[in-house]
Amino acid sequence: MFTVFWYVVIFMHIGLVFFVQSFVPNMDPTGFKMARFLLIALLFVIAFKRKKLSLWIFSSMILGIEVGMDFPSFGLEMERFGKIFIRLIKSLVGPLIFATLVVGIAGHSNLKQVGRIGLKSILYFEIVTTIALFIGLLAINVSQAGVGVKKQASQQELDKSAELLEQTKQHKDHLIEIFPENIAKSMAENQVLQIVVFSVIFAIGLSMVKNVQHKNTMLSWTESLSEVMFKFTDIVMYLAPIAVFGALASTVAKSGVGVLFDLMKLVGTLYVALIVFITVVLVPIALIARIPLMKFVKAITEPVTLAFATASSEAALPIAMENMEKFGVPKKIVAFVLPTGYSFNLDGTTLYLSMATVFVAQMAGIHLTIGEQIGICFTLMLTSKGVAGVRGASFVILAGTVGDIEGLNPESASIILAVDALMDMGRTSVNVLGNCLASAVIARSEKELFVKEDDLFVEKA
Image (cartoon, rainbow, N blue to C red):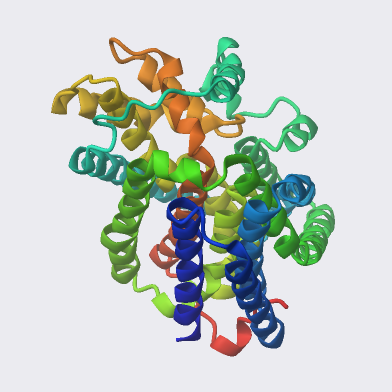
């Protein structure tokens, strides 16, 4: 009940700020600003008393929005805290995935199960992301958000678009790119899928070692590494509220709140579509798989909130792995499904891509038939899995898909960059939610989901 109240306070607060900033520009801001900061102070007091990381993150989100609006110069400087946090997270993702996968697979030596989990995961990913694509299509066709929009991309957005599209000029075979040529390079570049492939092969090789002493020595080392990396995660997570504050303060300072109203219908369509996807797809899947919803929500609150605030799936990966293991999903399934899902199960991103492609066509006055839209979905089913790890991957895929539509060029998608940060938060949080659910569903299918009692799941202060 308290969590519901917390969300109500947050959205009332943000809504009030947007309304006053946009529609009452001449209002004396002093009293209103003091009231807002008193509310934020109250939220921090509650967070301090309850000693929950999720509440600290929520409070930091609101403070970041306030600072970004009221003190934009200072908000821009705070961006470095978000960058520091992301760098630390990236430094631990590779060793954490490697250690947990090796322990999970080689420690049980059931290679048939590894193959079975892999096939189930890929099948699940394809079905759910395909549904997400069609929900995105349905949403944009109902809202017609791009019809009548005449806004032109700014020079800054065009420059950013050109920079991101520069990456596509170097042709790469995405099938080959799945396999690592140098594991140190893969870890340095944070190529999650390459790390997963190397770790699985390494674990299979280790399970085939006949010398028990050698096998146990390596297993013991990787298990110790896994424990250390989870402690590393615990330390880094203490920085999460500061990182969330810095990320949102700088985002609001750069974009302001006015840009939201220029493309409000597009942003609103995305968030409504994401809510529909969660309600009509993810929740029924959880019920069919007999996932205890309240305990599951408790387990994913921290990683989903962190993903929303930082717009980074990587930032949420370590805490998501840790919390899902506490929830009752075996280490071998968590370590395989979650990282693999970051390449193949981007539910929020795939929904956004189908929606955004049709939006750009609508904005240009191009009518796409149902057949053409379905063709776009089939294209996105393949391309959305091909550039994981590429900076600005969503925009790169979107621009490439738009470029395939007659009468449009990739730069037509540049306008969306104006509100991309706002939409990125929503789609990233759904990506993390979808992958956490996938790990629980796969565990249930293997009859290895052991949900623990409430007192064993303890949030970190």
